[in-house]
Length: 278
Length: 263
Image (tube, rainbow over all chains, first blue to last red; front, side, top):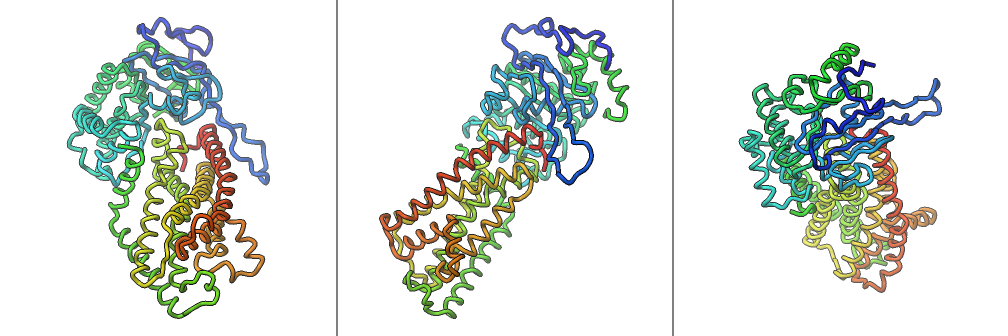
C-alpha cells in the first residue's frame, strides 16, 4: 500500500473532502464508504477444489464532487475504476456504502437517479451501427424524455461544439473510432446530466481533437453545473483538466487531491503494478 | 417523440437497412400460402374439420396467422434482449431512467408489430386465394388482446432467463414446439390421441387458437368465447406476477454479479 503522503485523511480509508470542496451548493456526487465484492459464480457440484470466494473490486471509497468540477479517476488496470463508474450509473449494485447523484441515491432512487447521469463506457457500443449518428441521437433523446424539437436543437448545438456536424448524417458503421467517440460524447450530454461518467473516452481522439473535446466537456460541465468523473490512463490529460484526482489501487482509494498531491502516490502505485498499468 | 415511436422507428430503420430481409419475408409468406393452398386442394373436405365448417386452407391459414402473432409475443422479448447483449448496446439502454420491464418491453415492440402485420398480410393474401373467413371483429380483436397477455408474460420470463444465463431459453423453444405440436396450429386438436389432447389443455395456445378460430371463421360472439377467455385470464394471473418477479430478480442478479456487460 503506498504511503499517504500529501493526501488528506479524515480516518483510514476515508478522505477529508470539506477542505477541497469550495462549492457552497450541495455536492453533485457524494460517495460514502462504497464497496463492491463480486460474489462467486455458480458452483458446479462436480467441480473439485476450494469454492471461489468471489472478488473484492472496491473497498471503503469516499469522495465528493461539486458542480462544474472535473474529477479524474486513475489507477492500474483492475483497480476498480469501471466498477465505480458502473455503480454510479446504476448498472451495478454496491455491496456496502452509498452514493448519491444530485441528491438521489443510485440504488434506492433507481431508475430516476439514472436521469442525472450521462454514461460513456470504454469501447462504448451503445450506438447502432446501421443508423446515422443523428438517428441514434434522436432515439436516445426520446429515451431521456426530450421532445423532437428540443432534441433537434440540442443535437445540432452539441455537434457544433464537439466538431461533429459533418458526422451527423453518416452511418455509425462508417465512422472511425475517434469520430464514434465524439458521437458518444454528444449522446451522453443530450439530457443535460448532472454527472458525466466517462471511461477513457478521449483516448481514441487525435491529440489536437482530444484537447479541444476535453475543453468542451469542461466548459459544458461548468455551464450546466454538472460534475465530470472520468477514468483515464493519460496522466497529461488528467493534469490538464482535472481539478481533483482519485487514485484507486486494488479497489481502495489510495490518494485524493490535486494532481500535484496525488502524483507521488500514483507513481508508487503504478511502479508496484508495472505489468498491469497501461 | 414517445418512447413507443422511438423504438418502432429505430428498429424499423435498422430492419430497412437490410432490404433483402423484407424480400425474404415476402417470399416466405407467399410460399407458405401456396403450400397450404395446394395441400388443401389435395385434402379436400376433411371430416376432422366439420366442427369448424371450413376447408383446410381457411383452417390452416388462420392457425398460421395466429401462431405468428403468439410466437412473436413469446420469443421477441428474449430474442431482442439477446441481440442487445451480443451487440453490446444493452448496458447503455439499461442505463436510461426507465424500469427494466419497460426497456425489455419496448425492445420487443418492433418484432411484435411486424409479426401482427405479417399475420394480417397472410390473412389478406389467403382471402384472395379463396379462404372463407366469417369474422366477428370485436370478439376477434378482444380474443387477440387477451391471448397476447399470457404469451407476453411467457416472453418476459424467457427474457429473464436470457438476462441471467446469456443464452436463449431452452424452455421457450420447448414450449413453442409443444404449441405447434399439440395446440392445433395446422391440424385440429381432435385428431390427437387422448393423452396429447389432455396435455394440450395445459397450454395457453390451445385456448387462444380455439377462440380466435371460432371468432374468425364462425363469427362466434363474446358469450361463446367466455370459457376460453377465462382460461387465458387464469394463465395471465399466474404468469404475470411470475414474469415481473423473474425479470426483477434477473436484473438484480446481473447487477449484483456484474454480468450485465457480458455477452
